[in-house]
Image (cartoon, rainbow, N blue to C red; front, side, top):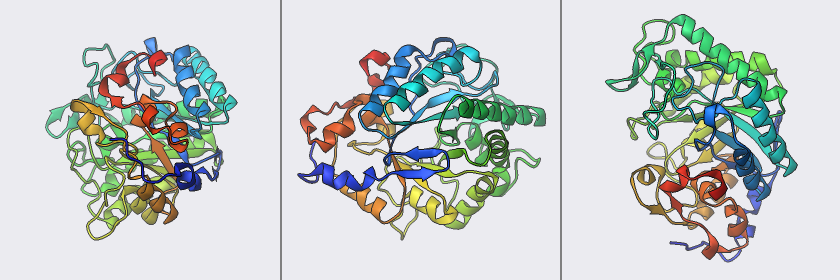
Length: 381
């Protein structure tokens, strides 16, 4: 389905072309590219085609490029040897090429710093990798994953995030994003089904289980200084349970996120499957809207924007067609102040020129998203 809500899509989306400044992040508009793994970094080194992949999205009007998840400076950070790393001379030199290419197009560049915790890579489960670690030896409820971390492991991992954060600032990035969503290491600490620790990193309340994330944020803040923007991506859903809610009400959400705010998070990236769905019964605000209300921080919203079904369905089978009928809802939510930036995911993976085509009403030229698209070479994307 390729129906559009109005004849003048450029006018509809005009409010999202306002600039935004948050410390070092000086976004020319409110559109971001959402982080999406691509697996085209042999030996952890981003290819020239990878830099071109990011450049093309910036050239087509996306103001802020958030990269695919990239491993931090420790050996157990990722579970596939084609995931890029954000540490070491050769990987950082490759990233510098991508940063310069995006900046030349007027875009902001934000690497997403990632540690998978105890999760194997579901696309490449047999890829070689170092022994994984996790809070309690679980990747999901009763699902073994990684060895349980010692306090020394925890300290070393926090230091690795800080090292990669410092490198990001040093080579010219505009902010960093920490991947705290979707069941990876931060989320494994947040969730009481995967965090069974009885030390200060565990406990019955979500505020206790946010200690690891807060300590990583604090370490990154010390590494980059006060004027460099730190984004934290969070979600309620997990890889092993799409319906779970870490925060069952706004009070619990405040207890979850406030430790990270106090540690230095500037922006939250609120990942949900469908951006238009209310987070709590009886109130229309989505996840991002509630996060903004309880933290007072700017928020990025994301979730099936421009698509006719959500990401989880696409993981299974089929093709998602462009669907623009909810763009009016998106703009209305923005104008109500429920979020500050909007991340575009599959639409940009399938079509780097999605935003230009939509605003020029070249609707019939939009490329549908196919799951196989995610595994094609960069030159085809």
